[in-house]
Image (cartoon, rainbow, N blue to C red; front, side):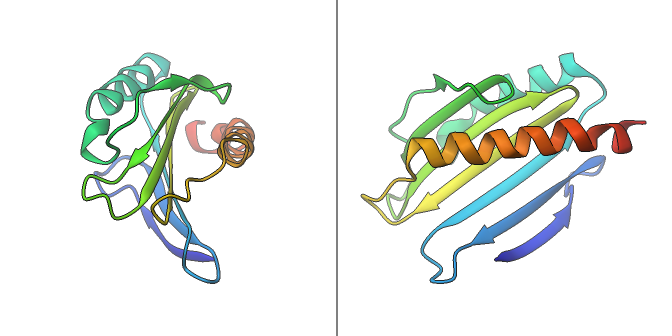
Length: 133
């Protein structure tokens, strides 16, 4: 179920959405930011990974097959209240961040993270031309 959708809060092109399951025990936050070009998207991805500790602790970035420069970090929220898996990747001039949240000790399975990310990458690849011209 879609809990909320907002345009890019920092201005520019992009969107954020929050999806939760019916029992409100799992959530996926999706943020897509459209940047001027692929180099800017890669730089934004690198900056996001440098700051990842503010939202995911206890995990090291590892490669993911999703999108370009796909990276996943598995850990917990800084307060330890939930498990968090962050998936970041670029698709052309877009930076995508998917954050999976669940109860402590119940991380989102890696295949679910990858499958969801691949679907988002496909949606970006097909939808970007209508946004970027």
